[in-house]
Image 1: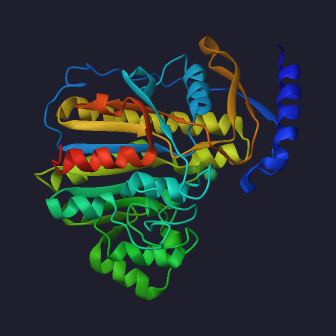
Image 2 (image 1 turned 135 degrees about the vertical axis):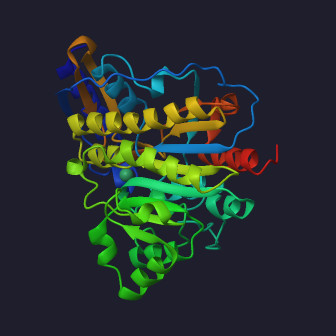
Length: 379
Ligand SMILES: [Zn+2]
């Protein structure tokens, strides 16, 4: 079947689906795009401790927002057929349905990953009865773990917010920032300086009372700080290597501040945003950038030997399909059948001791419950 036929078939399929589509998927229609990328290679660890029963001190959870099988395939083949995440040996799938919707949003799925409980779309850190539910940092910080979040979204974006906020609505921007002051985080970095400075002065002061706030990762205040909020000027396309570099920074910062160990959540937030816009080259670019951050985490896990890295997504976006690729030329052609989220299972990759516990098919909430059980020594 050639591309034109595939487009027609996809378009016809989408037209027939429109009536039953979720509200986010109303504008369903097929869009295509292609790209040539500059190949960045990949990293393969030794697998010496992978799947072993060695003690786990640190867990790094990496969430590619909207990163379904389509985005992973597109980035992998465009990058010559390799990614660090696809070099790993432990693979599973994650079901993402929320408590009230077959197709989740990032707030409900972020809450499932952050708390181990399914909730309604739009809710952050609260169950369907609107009661607060403890997130991983709130559970692990009292046990002596240092906890952090890092994202290419604004800090009030649904995924990072799920790890420190408790709000009925993901749109409660000021409430989410206010929750940061009372959070259990030791490290946070996300967008942006401007967003922070647009918050009420009382919120800014409460956050400054709890965190050392810097706008430059080389600021001398970083070294002597106890808790750090690093806010870059931008997290959009012109952010350079912010995500991989800050992943390294976050790992070092957290490792230095706890003998017990740390939990870090890293989000590649903009894969989802580009899929919503049906921008194929940028979807590939964002997935490759996320893979560089994964490489930083896997390299640390390899050196450390007591670190488990889990890579997955909160949901699929765009019904992204790789249609054609020339791996040797860094070329890929993709199709989107949706402008919204889809309910399809998302891939999971894991590396480190006990990685096998994350293989097979699981719920997004299961991933959090396993993390909590491992680091709290419950099993
Ligand atoms: Zn989305």
